[in-house]
Image 1 (tube, rainbow, N blue to C red):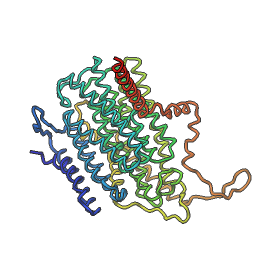
Image 2 (image 1 turned 120 degrees about the vertical axis):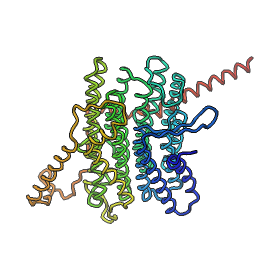
Image 3 (image 1 turned 90 degrees about the vertical axis):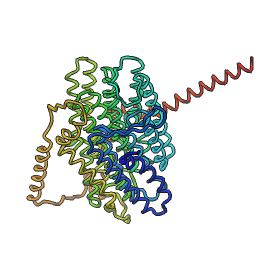
Image 4 (image 1 turned 180 degrees about the vertical axis):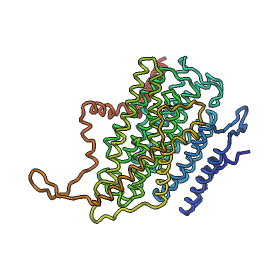
Length: 590
């Protein structure tokens, strides 16, 4: 008999997705969809209160389908359902009448829940494949080319994971995930299985080098799709399975640690450098979604308790503020009908709530205290420094030094990018034409998800100590030591006091108006209105010799995984065609 929780988490969303096609009223469709998301969220919260959850049913032969949750996957289940509910609410006023959209959203919820619940490779691989098909369907609302690119890269990495899982099952003799102790990477088959499975997990998380489909998809896919897939669900599930591969399935050695540290560090640097020069807000956010995945890989690669927990903490934090940032971009597009940086500006006066949420998200992703992004990044920094102190191998120490520098430099460049983001959208000059309709605050269905996510950014930053020690840390069988921990509550109080004192002094001065004057250039008065477009921010960075070389390397399309896969598969197909042709010729001659 099916468990009642499984009915609300998996069966009901699947059935409701089909039922929506029988409804003619859009209002009825949205009401049913929202109700199913609420029930699924309630079921995930109910399961979190239970000490354990395990369900099994014999399907055929000796195979028993088992679903279950450990302490960490229960948190991920709640997060996935919460983001799904908020994106669904936002979509009601943003998407409009896209045929089949809400059915796809319900099916995505069901199979994402099934991925989290899966306790064996068979069910996990099945659910993952279903999510890939749904991703392709979502991207089909935009561009066929971007959908094809995503399907090629994600599908290829999915195949790699299946091959790796098959080798792992051959080595261990079980399909469970896992019931045996982690196996050492000391044989060629172990190395092969590890790298095949990690490649699939990194592609799902949107980490380099399997990341290039995300910026391409962002230009055409609906914004809520980018908020729920690359920004939240894929990060949660991809990093979760990557964490399990590195801790539960295998025992990492020094060469693996060095490789993963380099992958994480280079992903941070290259992605954030690309974000600096973007003129489309969607692509700017897409590259930052890739960059943040580098921090998570780096934290897990430190093989320290604080670094690993910091990486998982950052996984949750990133899903919160990155989903919020994509939804903010959708709100600005709804008012301005554009994502181009130079066509935005001055929205803070018209959309104060959206601006406040956008500012919180921007400070969070930039690692500014007291917000949640700082708390998790601080733990990752400590993990990297602890790994550096423990390491005796010279190459490993160099890798840790490079990781620490990359992580901190990446945060600085992230802040620079979001100075551009806030200026372009909210604090710059209003570039609307004189007869254009003035922007206004979005509907409550679009604003409420932003405010909830913004409150989570503040809450998980101000109360980070309590969250880590009471909720996150108990999910791991690790000893947590925080030699450089910070009193988040005290720091938040001091920052708030300083801000209040500044506002008080500003009020005492009485000078609340900004002085305006004419532009004076070269001894003559200029009567044209001065302009400070955000597209000019960091434009000269591409001319810096070292950066110029890096940009040239990044922009080489032949290094795009999509082109590599196409070239390799094309070469293999031509080779096989040649073999078949030669065999046919020799048979005719004989």
